[in-house]
Image (tube, rainbow, N blue to C red; front, side, top):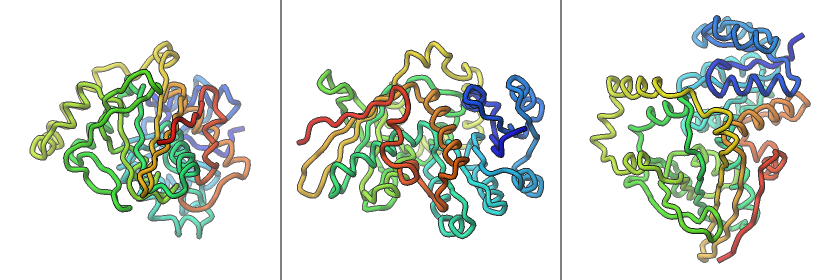
Length: 354
């Protein structure tokens, strides 16, 4: 008999990793998606039930969720897919989880906090690598410096992307780099670039600011008004950072977007098992207060895709065990800053104070 868990979108790269991990952990979810043949194929590998669902079919979606306690939503781009699933979850009083990294989706879920509380529903987007480790690190950094007014986080080691992640990046070209200033999410203008010491004394690495989900969630978790998130720079990222408004406009037009996505579709679906085993995430947070004092903390993790499957399913397990908190939540608000320490290979270190 299936658990009262529905995983929507288990046919993509990350979705298949989650389905495999769900089987290994003893879950029996219902897999769902719009392509029935693909969903049945993945479900058949693990003995899971499956159903074909279009997010645009509100009635069918609500019927499917009436007997479900929690949805783990994996089908991006979440800017298009999140709202209808959230609508259905609120109507059927089903807890909503996803693995988005999109700032606008976090903010849209946060705007429905009161509605979710009234329905007794938890809305917890960002259950994967974005934003579980970084959110927990930011919350930990705030605990170390309660009077922090700004935080900058550098993230290294994410060199191999799935097609879905790459496409989300392509879709965000027109927005430019978003940061939080004075509590508001705003365009950075010229993309910030700086060096981070990811390995604590073994050299500086050039890093480029990105519109990572913590620009939204870091504020909700800690109240810190100024937040900037950086990625270890690649040549492609440096090229993107140098784009002016006109080129961003051109690259965000329909024909160019379709061309870029076709290029992505020609690439491997994502890193293979050996590549994931050799990868490591390194996150460094630097908090500052009004007096100019600074504290640094570092978090090392396994590969981001491997960790996504682990964190998302652990959150599902906790929700099924009665651990849901109604309303909009971030990982650290729901489970504490130490949540990330529960996963093998995740190590938090407090570094020098300046």
